[in-house]
Length: 337
Image 1 (tube, rainbow, N blue to C red):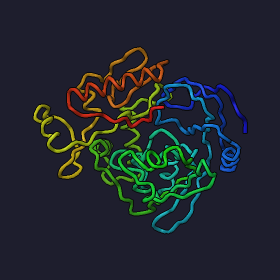
Image 2 (tube, helix red, strand yellow):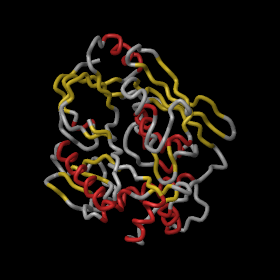
Image 3 (tube, rainbow, N blue to C red):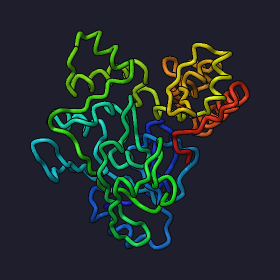
């Protein structure tokens, strides 16, 4: 293990924000992590993996641990399903593609989501009608204070919409090292409920899609709408899609008959945050190097050298406008550091 000092974190966050870490160590095994935790003394720790769901607004005056533990293991297998574990440092999309290549179903709708496997449960990542919790079995995590390993079941994680116990009760107390999923091997339960997927399949003339077909459709859709972080700094969806009451929705719909929506239950409606932002005039706008993407208003971008504070200021401007116009507060999906 090598400690680096005043290390730039620009390549360790998908926004490409250039801040410095006072100390930095890349962790490639659980044993290395355990040694660091035993020796950390009173040092403050900051954990980063793919850096895909954070906005860094300041230098990190702490020991930054970059979790790069790799490995994929089959834990159990039958004719119908497979229990598969992936280490925290595995690239999420690469892991999804590994599963698809082996005809393991359940993660195909989550193709091309940026980040690492270890971050996925924290956010309960989701896309196109599927969430991580749908196939999640458990995760292994090391308690930062004690250095002891703990296993969190699906129930333990208290998953919600882009939420989990790791963002609440135990925030900052554990480092996830491995995540385990139960995936199908046959009779895959395909989810093509989102119109964009159905349209993409129809355009290709696919009537009976495979999990690979769905993955390719999702990749095509995401590439058409979302910028590649390696080309334009971004963290995907910056805001959560708000859930509002039916009464509140009806008032907005009276003024905006074309508003898209997803019914949650008889009393609650989910409204696309991107639509609200676009209606408020932000889509494609740019302030210096901070801007709103031209194809997807839900994505804030760093065109070159924007600071984290400039991106944050833009997000606050958007929140205020949406609150003023629609009486809706947009919660950030991205973690502000």
